[in-house]
Image (tube, helix red, strand yellow):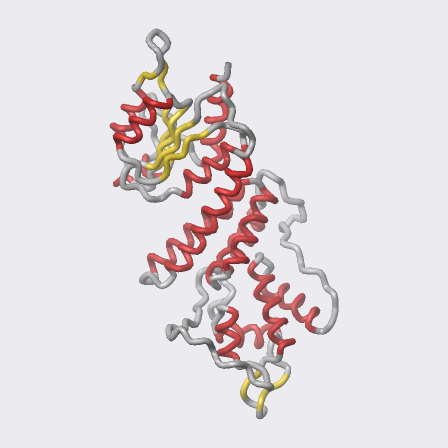
Length: 342
């Protein structure tokens, strides 16, 4: 039997009429009404009742389920806890404790060996729980929970670890689910992508709030022509801002002439080019940019070029840099920035 708590697999009831559901009666709300208000399936509610005892205290006429306000609050607790990565059985115990009038604290997401989290890396089981919680919130289209969890994971573990171990894996899972289900989950991927982008830009704005440095040129970040996947470049932009490295972010699908013109005008400390697939990779452009010389006559320089993203393949051509991921790209660019400071 499928576990309804599994990420990206829960079926949400969808009301396409645009009408508000009927007002609850004095007897409480029905399972269908509660499922629609929470963004979960009726099957999930019945499963939670069967497995964990999270069911209505009273049933109308002894048959139909009717959920009282106390029952609804209990199930909302269950949804909130599972959305943060708490295992369903543990979340159910906490929800039941609260429903019975206890003041049990929310169970913490913890690693299997009991070790505390490192600010630079997540234990594997913690990363999985964070991904599951984020996926559940996205499937429920719970924007507030998605935003809260993304902000919390960046604050707890740092942007690089949050991107590599939580954001990117959850985005990939959402993309795979969308591709394999006939566009049924496109709204989930769009919601998740928008909030990831929002968090990354908040990090960038907060880090770049101080006056920009004048002692070096910025790192130029751009996606190749026809490449619309900008989130990895947004993550690099935010991570470099955190590290104090000036950046110039051009965004997605930048025409060849625009990239070339920006390099000649700005004289960047380095150029990072992103491509998601081989179909958008442009090795001649990368080589051309690496060979471009800029600056005043007699003191012209060249900008190192980083090939970022899976579309470039694994083996870098001679004269070009090929970081293995966000952490490696940040390390390379921070080192380059330090080497060219006056």
